[in-house]
Amino acid sequence: MHLIDTHTHLYQPAFDGERAAAMERCMEADVKTLLLPNIDSDSIERVHAMMDEWPDRCFGMMGLHPCHVKPGAWQKELQTIDETLHSSGRQYVAIGEIGFDLHWDKTTLEIQHEAFRQQVQWAKSLNLPIVIHVREAFDALFEALDSVNDESLSGVVHCFTGNLSQAERILDYGNFYLGIGGVSTYKNGGLDAVLPHVAHDRVILETDSPYLAPVPHRGKRNESSYTRVVAQRVADLWEMSLAHVADITTQNARALFKLNG
Image 1: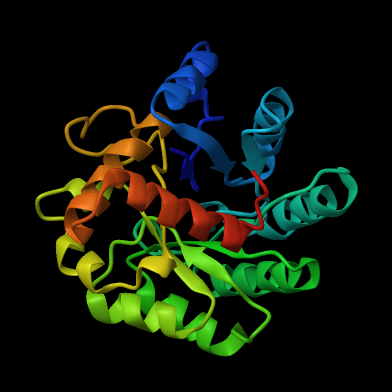
Image 2: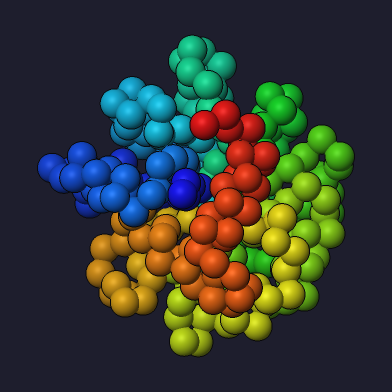
């Protein structure tokens, strides 16, 4: 069995000193591939370090997280990330994570839109998918995607927590997927009313570690080995075996991110 954690921040300081042990636990849980979303200029070196240490298992993205789109600084951040994309000599699997977050700061919405548009253009020019963060901002996301989406754009709304109508609207854009993580295991997470009605070929798995650990680990540090817990929850909702869910979601992730392994 081969599971892919399509969204993990295992490079973050929360794992310093035990990152290798966390990677071993991944192998024990059949989580054999990890995708690492960048969040700002400070995290670039950490993403690269994991790509270098585990080159056959860890694959990086480059992007500016909406919570790091700050007045007076975001353009320089984008410049640094853009330079990394084009001059680091490395191959990335996506532009991400990018998107919209109105939970912490609603005053930056305009520049979040500007940053999103610019990074979507990178994705189109490099033929890469986008990995979208959206928190309390589906209206902003739909406004943006209505403007920029075309047949050349693909991507995933990671850590999807919306309702069925929002899921259907995302999938109607075309080559888009839903990233399903630990929230699917929460009693009031709402995804039990969504996942049974979503096409199986449009779902990929993730943890978003170290955040949003699934039950029974909720409230503790999340880690990529828990992708297996998420997969089991999806298997229960789809009424199929864990191995079948692994096959489907791994194939989906390989297709979206153009992974060979």
